[in-house]
Image (cartoon, rainbow, N blue to C red):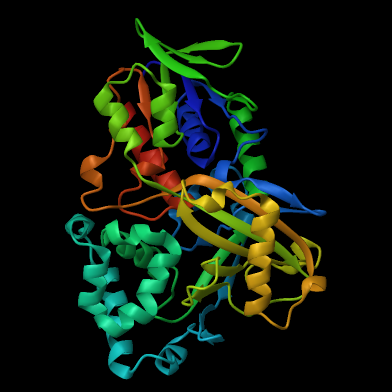
Length: 434
């Protein structure tokens, strides 16, 4: 294969993975990242004197694409595996659902409800052909398998938590993909979960990835905001504010609407498809506390009065010593990009979330909170609507040497780092081996 000059727009895990695979094949690669550092949604930030991930991430035993990258960049040996627990907050009380005995004792559901809930999870874990589920609303599929009571008390709050009002337009592929991934993390049935993290968090991963790429000859340009991408006479050009760079091939990894605006020569049909991809954003408040909140890595909240839709206690997984003795909690809320909450300032959001956190956990007060910070991203999760894959924009555009690979191409999975890497590798292979 002839070696070419490739430009990659976006230095998140997807862009870095594509650059890595191209460099391994001898291509000349340049990454353009608008932020001051690589990593994208997997970047880190400072919380007082502690640096950790801006948004919460976890690695599963079954995340083979992620583990392959970690092996390539030399940090797989820093993976730590921990048995975690899952909690539910219902009716003002915390309940554990971390093993089969707790599952059988779980309140609000009778034995038949519990049997049907377990059957739903097992049924989803056995399904191989996800495409049939694309034509079935997730609400219809869950009611059919779990029944009305279990749907109302368990599934509906969880759908609202992860998808907001978009759950009404989402296909059953969403719940299938969610169960497939989590089921793969369990050693058997509804028993133990083993989750993992790399020492130092994604700061370690991003630093090692960047060093690996640079050792492979990849040029990484940060603070490099792309203004336009074009293709004329077989030359693909990436323009910044005051510079332009020519390539044989360009891969754009940014969200659909932004990709459409950066490439004005796309056809109107292509632009419309990109603009019509529906995204959910996230607002996530991170707290450093002086003591743990609970033994649960994740607490699912079925009470809709709280603004955040779950409590992720990272230090139920990560050793608090890695965070200088602090306990790290994330409070996420998934909403549409036009939600008014995105327009509120960080102080309002922080106070709003904190007020509700302290109500949910009355044993805490403001003196227990050492840090509270707000992270936002408007385009995070694509909504897997009915027949989603049929309406997806193509990777290869009408401009022969400009390609678009982004998280919208996760059509049979949920958004996580492993799926991002999987899409990067499989879609790049489609470009290289048409």
